[in-house]
Amino acid sequence: MTRNLSGVERTLAFGVVALAGFVGVLVVTSSQRVKSAVGLSAADSNHIAAQYQSQLAARGPAYQSPQWLKQVHIARLQRAAAIDRNVDDAPTSRDSIDAVLNAASGSYLETMLAEDGGTVSRWRGPNDSIRVWVQSQSSAAGFTSELVSPARRGFSAWNELGLDVQFAVVEDSTIADVHVTWSAVMAKPDQVGATFRVTTGAGWIVLAHVILSTARDIYTVQNAARHEAGHVLGLGHSPNAEDIMAGVTEGRQYKITDADARTATLLYQVPAGAIRR
Image: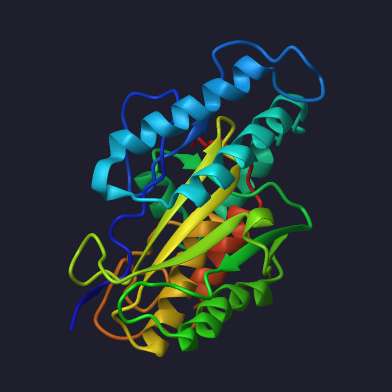
């Protein structure tokens, strides 16, 4: 049976009028310049919080987040905005970017960039740990604690690729960069998971929220977690049905393919932001 692995991966957008693509962008902006070299002014912090709440309201039922997670997100966005304003990323040469794009055979990087308007979203790296918290208790119908470990394994599988960033499972939700929660009802009937990714204006991912269905068996949940973890890293959908990042599948993708691995590796060799041929 055809399954829609993740049909509503979208992120929220600050400071933009329209959202495009399977993953939009939550761009952290401010109504005025930061006055402090250390952090944000009170006005900046309040503006980010208000924008976040406004965008959530605009999304309506397409994205629902618990109140405690909203507070965690706002605090993280405020910290990320301060960092983004004070970090001067070294430019990547055009030749280096072209070399990566020219070596993209065996991957779906070009397809992914075309769907995202030539924009790269990824974590900063190098050597960053992306802290993942998986909800261990839930009132969602069909939830069982036996789903937790498979969901965690779905993320740790990507660590074998040796990327500049690695997933690290944490028990404290307040320090996590990625929160995985459970739902008995998804946006589409055959949907197994959804990822909502948040980036800065420069294209750096700062946090993500993954929602997994409780209406599936353990193996399907683990495979869905692998798929959503790919989105968390910054990957889009693959046009190849055998890849873990395929948007729709006829069966169970149970491993990260060579194409998945190559695409993720290439993604972390180009800078975040707009990439043009």
